[in-house]
Length: 228
Length: 228
Image (tube, rainbow over all chains, first blue to last red; front, side, top):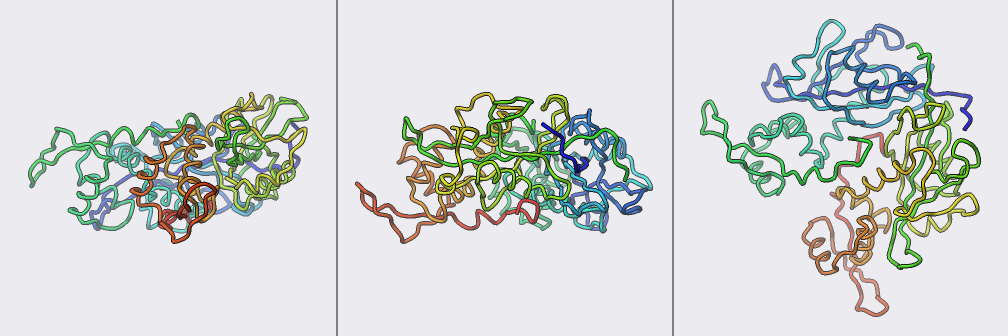
């Protein structure tokens, strides 16, 4: 193969979602870390963590390294989200960005560094971001809202077992609307995807809440290579 | 932003699946077009249609153009499948390939050019391909087999309306196994995703078969931007 003469440049970026209570409403909300740009173009705008792809570094490794360098976050697993490559997405230079994403538990998110140039934002209250990064976050939110991934979403945010109230928190944060607890319970119990365990957690004010887990068959379709 | 010094090179490739009867068994099978390489590396091996990304061409446009140039195929719509970028996937040069895919009806596939250097292969009987292209096809097949996309798959292969027998052909080709007609009918009718129409097609030997279409709600989760 010959290398083409005109070249696009490769970059990587990451979208990291965590579930956190909103300061004002107390409701669980999706948050993500952003980095303030200290260089042109788009100096001083907030952007997704990321950087250039060195020729000798794997895509996911570069995404993980640039995320760690800017935010101290190291999710166990980054999944490829999508590749954004519109000609005009970066001024003056054709940049194709391979975007990775992860969902992290709040304990992990709390270990992230914050400061003048790194901050967490509520995903539904973002300022205008650098480049096409608002569009990238919108696409990630859309992917999150497609129901097919709820089993993975709940697992990433909550761990192996969870109460129905915790699972409802996840659905409410993703859908950005309140759900009726009784309807939610009926819908989950009839979905065939949840398995009831014998364990309970003691609630502060209520009777102990039963713990559930997702049926493992929900994971039988993991891909054979690329996203593992 | 500064451009990194060491650079990876961007390419695009396409995986085009069509449903065709297998010559020997007569069963519907997934086929895809491949192009024989006329240059090193991997000269004479079969490869997915594709080429370099020019700096002034959109990703999907480059995928469509290289597909058209090699096979004469022009699917109405190419969807981004995944970006493959392993350091060692191409000898001597770091190549990151953004792979697009499409499902085409057999009428479309029949208009494709074939010749010494372009040929259709059964997806489950591929020779060793150039680069990591066997792995790319495997990944595409995996994506096809995740049930969540059946509505789109059937629509792409069959059009707006179809008989249950035609839909079973699609499922059998994707799953690569025979399905019991009665069980399949029960499963589809209870799935809540199919709508029965008043139309029928006259079967050669049987009573007229009813036409079905997918419930439009199956498409409500189309992405807001990137993959449309």
